[in-house]
Image (spheres, one colour):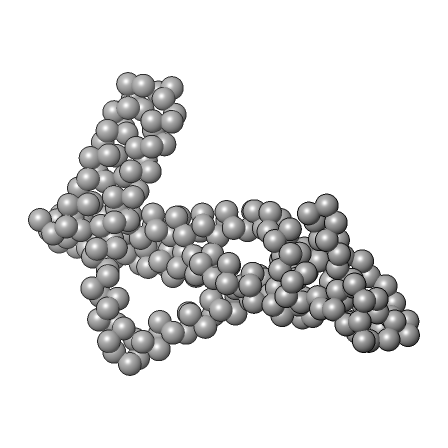
Length: 232
C-alpha cells in the first residue's frame, strides 16, 4: 500500500476508535479531541505525501512556476498590509513613517499570511476533490477509487483548518506584539537629531506631516511615545 493510503487508513482507524469512545465513554471530551486531532493529522499527512510529487512537477514547468510565484507576491502584499495595521495600532501614528517597524512585523506575519492563502487554495481543492469523489461514486467506479478521493479530500480539509488556525492565532494575539513594535520603533525608526532646531539633545524623534513630531522615551522598561507640534 502506498504510504499516503497507509496514512489515510490510520486516520480511519482513529475515527473508528473515536466513534467507539464517544459511545462507551461519552464524558471523555479530552480523549475525543485528541483522537480527532490524530485522525485529521493522519489524513493531512496522507494528502501531503500524495500531493508533494505533483507540486514538484508543477514547479518544474515555467507556467506552473509562475502560478506558484503569484500567490507568493500576494502573500508579501498581505504581510505588509497586516504589518501596517499592527504598527498603526501599536504606535497610534501613521505606519508609513515607520519603515523599519513595518518591515520587521511583516517578516513575523509572513508565515501567518501564507497560512491564510494556503487555507483558501487548499480549501477550494478539498471541495473539488469531494465533488469529484461524489461523481465517481455515482458512476459506480470501483469503491477503492472513491475512497482514495475522499481520503485526499479529508486531508486537504484538515490542512485548510490547520492553516486557518495559524492565521487566527496570530490575528487574535496581535496586541501582544505592541510592546515589541514600540521597542523596534524606538531603536529603528526614532532617531536622535540634536542639531535640528527645537530638538533636545537626548530626544529620539520622528518627523511627521503637518509640523508634528513624535518623541520616544524608555521609561520603566516601556517605550512611551509623545506627540507635539514642532516649534523652532
